[in-house]
Image 1 (cartoon, rainbow, N blue to C red):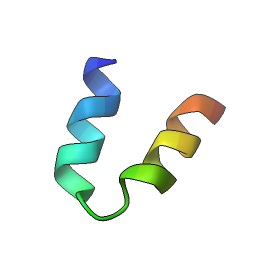
Image 2: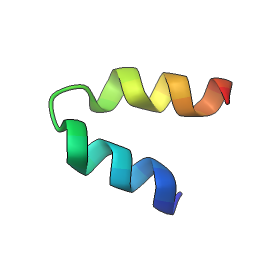
Image 3: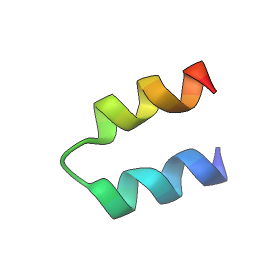
Length: 25
């Protein structure tokens, strides 16, 4: 979850997209 949160904060607008990518990984 920490990695997901970090990616969300960095992208900001692409939280949904990053979430999907993180799950794929």
